[in-house]
Structures are given as structure tokens and as C-alpha cells.
Length: 291
Length: 343
Image (cartoon, rainbow over all chains, first blue to last red; front, side, top):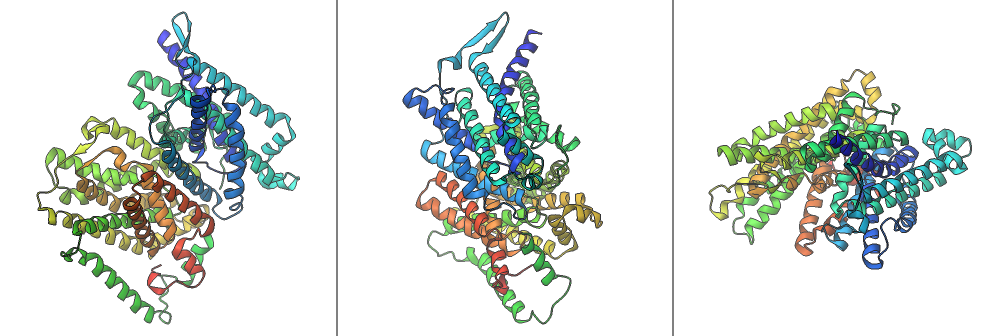
């Protein structure tokens, strides 16, 4: 029983971080119908920023979110203006976005490998290796902090989408882009902001990733496959779905790790993806979208 | 992008034999075809050439990429279902034949064709699952598929796990060693281009193009879209599986990451797109171009990381500025030379 609770706790606190990682991805798909295969590549890029900030200036990885978020926001807006604004409204738009982000992910991966080589990195703040203890249970301090930060950021995202005028416009664009444009939403501006926000969330996730997991440039494919599995499970473009998908699968993978060992844990996500595709292709919270 | 694909099929409807416009064009086409075939099949006869084995090795690689890109085009081009997981077939073929060799001593030259059928089976099985999804969810599932297979093979003791599988090369003198591999791959390349040509000019191919245009309409029009898609997925694996068996054998040692890495899928996609998706000649041109550029840059710079940057960068540029690729863009401009027009 203790073991069961322990695994459940470990799964849930990882799930919080996965939820943050997936939220930017699902936001981007919801607003712009962009399937961002480069999301995890941007996360790894942010992890490198956090790594060097820690290595050279001793900036705590959690504090480095204050650097990675604005940097990645600016980068996101730039990428949107440079690449994605040109292809808006073209035929086979979704497919185009997948191919473009695929090219983008390869470019980033190659550049990261070229500059920082392929060796494993991670930041080592003191709390990364400490734990809280409650009776028989333990709670890794670093993961608990990461989950706290994730919840805070997700709450801020929720508040932004619910209470601000821009946030309402973002949600309107998610629901129906054309209708939003008709009622006077500046869809391009919203798109640029959403792209920036999606990337900023990837940036924050990257800062946390830098001390939670060892990373190297080509690791982003595994990450993006995991995150995409999460948002397909939750229903693409649904924030609620992404968060619930993240928690469910993180717990599932924690149990798989406990039972079969860590090398099997990514398989949980892929198998879940295939099960969802077989039995409920639109995902748990998705609408049937015709693209 | 869509228009480029509709119009040619209407203008050059394969079912209507437009005698007037052919004639001289057909002659040039036949001539070019014969010259290319002679060049491909005759290369190993130039034995006095400098660096003979190196040239054959490069030829082998180029022919492999022609096989991969042409096969990818069946699903990714004609049917419009982009797969980022087709390197799975390459690994399936390599491991099928490699394990038969390692454990039972059966030569991959014999088992390669069976490896092709094995790849078709694997494709059919996974196609039934992944092709329940359309659009982005399908693409995502193909990435997950490769990573899943990679993970499984990594953890499977019989396949050597992540440390890989090794076996001896065929007992041939060094100056003859490359020849059987080269001809095997040449058969794959010719076979896959011929397959692509036959599909482009069949009812099956028209059905796939209809799916690519508008799947719901195609379904309403009475096309069994599911059967068509899954068949396309499975058939496209056949020659890739054979190529995998031969290529894996020629390496004499491989690991899961040799085949199940995303860079291979990337090059398939890029070759096909830069040459022109949903055309017969496009993937061939694209594959030769990209494979040679890659070989050149490895020889010159040796840096694989920059190779990935170049692959990604070219993909972005092609998508932004000429998404229809070489063949498609030339056709749109009305300047497609007849020897490239096999659609």
C-alpha cells in the first residue's frame, strides 16, 4: 500500500510538469492549428539557456524561468512572423505546419548539437537531490518545486485566458477563427501572441527540465512524441484535456517504471496513443474536428 | 499545392491516350529511360575506375534513397498521408534478415524478398491502427510508432538489444564484395519506381489521389478509403523492407538507432518533397540530389550535426518558396521536360 501511494505521488508530481510542457503545445494547436513538432526542441533550447545561466552565473534553474520565458516569447513571435504568417490560409495548411515545424526541429537540433555537442547535461541545484519525508513516503524536493511552479504558471495561463480581453480573444479564436475575425478580433495579433505564449511555456518547461532530466539535443524527439501522445489523448486543442492526459499518463508511466524498469516508461505513452487512436480517435475531450 | 495535383491528372488523364501530344515526347522518354537503366546497371562493369568500391558504395546509397523516397511517395504523395515513420520498414527488413542470418545462417540475399513481405505485414498491422486517425493525429502516431519499435527492439534480448547485431559479410574477395549489394539495391530502386509508376496510372492510384483531395468526398463517392490507405501503407513498405535487409547486411553490424532515427525519415520526406510529391519522377530526382549533397558534405566537412541543420533548413526553404518541388514547379510553369513527365 505504501508503495502504491509512493508511486502514485511520484506520478502525480511528474504529471504536473508534463501538463506544463503539453499546455503550450495544445494552445498552439487550438489557436493556430499548428502541430508544433519543434515544441520539445524549443524546450531543450531553453534547457541549454538555463544550463549555461546556472553554470556560468549560478542562476537557479527555477529563477532562470524569468530569462527563458521572455526570450522564448520573443523567439516565438519571430518564428511566427518569419515562417508561419506566410503560409496562413494556404491549402493543406495543417500538413504544411507539421512539415515546417519538422524542418524547424531538425534545424534547432542540428545547431544545438553543433554548438553544445551531444553529451548529457543537467543543472545541479542543491534541491535536485533532496527529498521531503512523511512517515514512509518521500517527496523529491526538486520535482515538488517544479510541480508547484507548473501549477502556478498554469493558473496564470487560466486567469489570462479567462479574465483578460486578450485572453478572451484567444479563446474565441480557438473556438472559431473565422467567427472571431468577423466579430473584430485581430486574429494575426492573437496568433503572434499565442505563438509567443506557447514558446514561453516551452521555455519555462525547459528551465524545469534542465534539472529534472538529463538532456541532450536529439532527446527532443522522445519528448515531443510523449507530449503529442498526451494531447492526442486529451483531445487536440483542449487545455483541460492536455492537463488530465498528462496526469493520467504520468501516473501510468510511474507504475510501469515501478513494475518493469525505467526503460519501458516511454512505451506507456506510445501504447496509450495507439489505444486512443483505436477506440476514441478524437481523444478524451476533443471534438471531432474536420480539417 | 492541391491544384498542382489535380490539374495534371485531368490534363494528362492516364485513361485517355492522347496520341497527338505524344510521339516525339515518348521517344525522348524511352531514350532517357534506356540511358538511365544502362548507366545504373552498367556501373559495376567499369572495373578499372579509380576508387571502384567507393563509387559502388555511393551508388548503393543513392539507389537506396531512390527506393525509400519513391516508396514513401505512395502514401505521403499520392494519398497525402505524411508519414514520419517509414524508416520503421527499413529496420524491420534489416532485423528480419539480419536475425535469420545470425541465428540460422540464411543469407539475406535469399531472405530479402521475404523481408519485403514481412515489412508489408508489419505495415498492414500498424496501418490498421494508425490510419484510424486523419491529418495531424496520423503524423503524430507515425512518430510514436518509430519510437515504440525502437524501444521494443532496444529491450529485446534476441535482437541484441541496444548493443546491436553483428554478422560476417559474404565470403567474397574485396573487389567483388560490393557488386551483389549494388545489384540488389538497383533491383529495389527500379522496382519501387516501377511500382510508383504503376500505381500512379491505376484505379488504385486515382483512389489515393481522391483521398488526398478530400477524403470524405472520396468515401461518399464509394471508394473504400480505409482499404486504400492501409494498402498504400503496407505496399509502400515492400521495397523499403528489401532495401533494409540488403543495407543492414552490407553494414555487417547495426543497432536499433541505425534505422530508427528520425533523420532517416526526414531525408525520405525531404527527398520526396524537393523533387515533387505525388509524382513519379520527383522522388527519384530529389533522392539523388539530396543523397549526393549529403555524401559530398560528409566528405568535405564530416560534421553530421551540420548535415541535420542543412536538411532542416532546405526543407523550410522548399516549403516556403516552392512547395510543389522541382517537378511540380516546372509543370506549373509549363516547362516540365517530357522526360521528367511520367504521371
